[in-house]
Length: 292
Length: 244
Image (cartoon, rainbow over all chains, first blue to last red; front, side):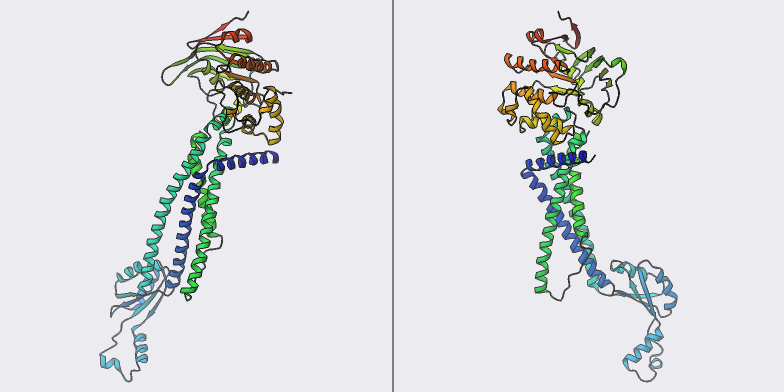
């Protein structure tokens, strides 16, 4: 059993290695395309993670202030706000408490209420939002509730950042899809060329009793090797780029802190996973006729 | 020197029926019509017994190559049945067909050697394809090369060999895995008479070692000298010719 496995492994690796050596420049075309795709994917992920982290920090300070109509009371509205999806916490302030606080802050002496003909303030609520992306939508929902006069929500910068992040995410998905298709096409053609250049050998192998699996497996191993090498190159480039960016940041923007996002192994795991999947998929597409 | 029936060879999925035990291959009313409507074989029935040295003659286009292709599963019959060691070839695909082909050696008129592999590597392809390890490959290559008289040219590439030598490499490749049936499709077609004679002497020797040999040939002189059993194909129809 062990001998059989070692014989198979010896054969597969030898055949795959020979195939890779014979593919010449096409090998580098496939590996460089895959590396470029994985590099962009990794870069997109890293940028997205950084923005997500910054937004989360910003979002934790993000609240919606809700001001009610003069006759509406915060206590009545509070349960309804708590029911809304995305609301983390609701804190209500009655007009009496707000008026007292304001008078105290302004140092008003005497009875200002009587001179103004009553308490001029209204009940208000402060709504803390779980996800910064939901601020705008939630503010709209709250505004539509009966008894609500105005809503304010904080930092517009955060909202814009959220939009930029959303746009970047879509651009990233579109770019990844386009580049993945291009990569699969290039690797499929590369392996198809290798298959063509070895068609005589494949034909002979079929005639002398090689099983379809035995014929196609070296090509699958070659696709896998494309994936591993492409992922390694992309990861290396990202590491170098990260190092350069960090050096520049320390020089130019020392107050900005680089966020530690994800685990150490998350990015390489994604790069290797995507690289190997694309490599193997391309090989399968190239040799599918041989398998039949 | 040359172990013809290796006990390590995998057994076929289907066992031979007792009636078919003496026949290594058989055709039962086989007709082959190609996609373009051309009729290759017409209701052919033939039994090839173990130990036969069968010659198939006929003009070009008579259906000789088609008959051999049906035997190693490169073609399928339009109607009728082809059996190899009791196993029907119809509907055999993939792994099952691959295992059946290990019981057959094929020699081609145009040699079908891989140009960028040496003589040794060309022969080793068969053993690698069948899962032999390096030691086993080394053990078998030497005797096979000596049998066809090409041991000194083990490291040559096909283009460095003459036509006769290339055909001998093709024979070595066809028998390296010790198949019980050897099919030779016009093995002398591209050779001068001297090389043709050498090739047929090798086939005769393999036959004497127990291999069943089926040869297609249109050279009457060769047929008269070597044939122990002869059939003729004429426009897809088969006729047994008595040998005196």
